[in-house]
Length: 167
Image (cartoon, rainbow, N blue to C red; front, side):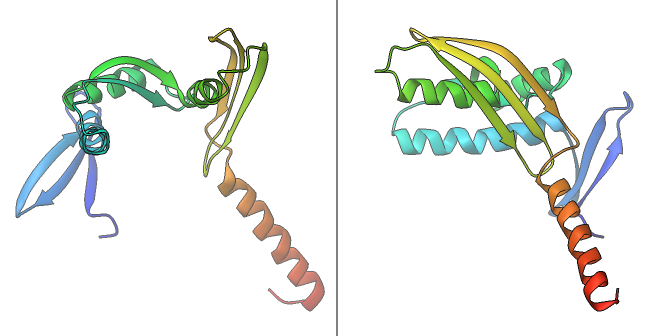
């Protein structure tokens, strides 16, 4: 068995993660798995800040649909958080940038470019007087660093074949 879990269909056709833990078979829905991660992050935040953390803003990839966004919010609630807002990762990055550059009151257009291992997302925002306005967000779920790796490998395999006449 390659993975230590199985993904099966529930009666409502949603995915369920099946694991064996201490000889017992356990079933988890995606929200429960996500909530475990958020619970750990919640614990780390409270330990680092040395104070209780009740409220959270959670970021999601730009390509998440409404049901994935809701599932993420539900996971936050399961983790014991008051989820104040769910925002896309790119505007969150721009928000962090804007807060860091707060002293500069000029109007700025910010382009956030996120090329991940398997996805590519971009957002265009305007920041003016502490107001952040998302102008556009787009993403491609099947384009990322892995695609560039594959193109480069194919290129160098062809070069190797050309130079050495071997596969």
